[in-house]
Image (cartoon, rainbow, N blue to C red; front, top):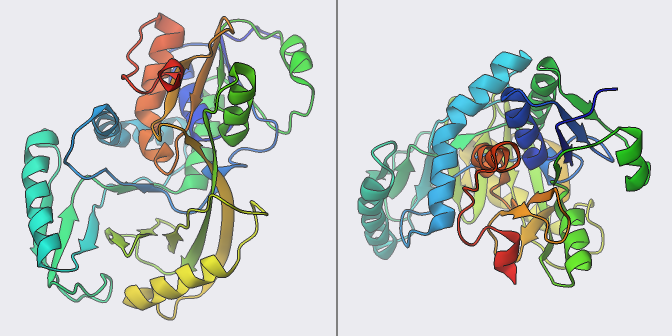
Length: 356
């Protein structure tokens, strides 16, 4: 069995994205997932690749912008290598504005976008036009941005696995051996990247004696509704994402306290009712799946990238809370630069040591 140049632990979006970028550059890659691909939050429903508001600019927002602008090329490469459609489309987003104050803030943000988004996308305030899709806007105005994109989480994960294997990488699921055996049995050498989500945050915290973050539960629903050519919606805190396969995902809740990480409950039923009240096309659409899972939230709320302190040759890629799919192309690039070329392009505030 060949020795891997890079071993990636974890089959969520960060692990898969990094493995793909490394194998695309010619590295021998082995990805190990103890459960199944997308077993955590990366196996959810929503797939909103949505930017932060264009104001109060900081390294996190700049990093996200880079990633969103890279996404079309990144996912096109995955689709070509895998022969599978990850469900990517950059169709923009609509947001109803509640009142005159919200309209004024949105116009200020339009000026910010013109300066910060490098002419690659627009943030505009437009009249609300009833069309059977967008919610009613109390002010009569909406924000329309052209940066927001969508991705089908499960289709994207499957396409990444197929692309990695097509380029000669190894993807292993349901690996139950103790870690010492995992490394010895698979002759793992070279850098090891830990992209293990909520469990990874707990492991890092236990190893270094400091709280690096925790899991936040989310619940989402999937409607049978054909709207694949429509823009995303964001209203009343809900993301409404039309997918390429004739479904619309709506999510999600954010729950710090929970007893069962995988059960859905009244909070999701309330979310479904809100979505039906907001979006005319969902009023009578059947719900075909309810989902719950726990997302890794790093203490800083930014992705946590870089060296695992005290473990030579080990690295961390974690904390993609709510924005993991949108951040994945840039995370993959930065981590591949670091482990393959020794080039550190991690922004301030993203490193493990920045949490000390």
